[in-house]
Length: 174
Ligand SMILES: [Zn+2]
Image 1 (cartoon, rainbow, N blue to C red):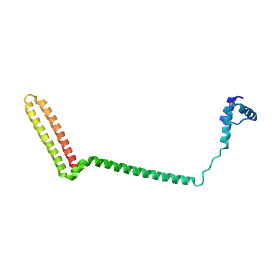
Image 2 (spheres, helix red, strand yellow):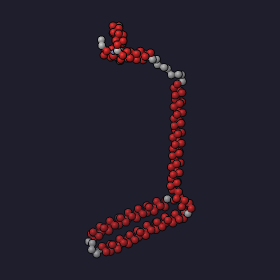
Image 3 (cartoon, rainbow, N blue to C red):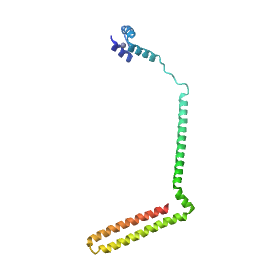
Image 4 (tube, rainbow, N blue to C red):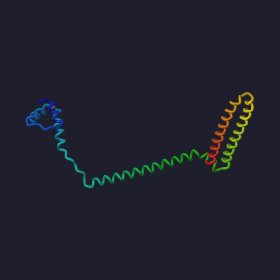
């Protein structure tokens, strides 16, 4: 019986015959590995399962619940702090606009109104230019191409009007 044999038996904690046991005892004197394995097996065999103290489950459940509650509270306050700081930051950045609005809402409204008026006048000029170009183009562009580009322009114009109305509504909502 060699080292491999004893090592396998010790690792698998297999039962040994009295003859094997005797051979093992003499082998343990020479082999440090098998000696360590035998010591470990002996130590593991002496370990007894510790039963938890009475009421352990209840205490564990209560502690878990308390920990969850504390975590929830932490999340709540963390979220609150985040929300407050975010709002503060937003106010800080929008302060110039807000201060203008609160100090003189008329100025802001007039700014919006002038923006709208300038947009409308731009559109008017744009359509005027388009009309002039159309008048010039009618001279040397075939009628079919003219019809096509006219419908294209009208679609573009409708889109432009729709988007400007949307913008106007958004500005009114602000
Ligand atoms: Zn050995």
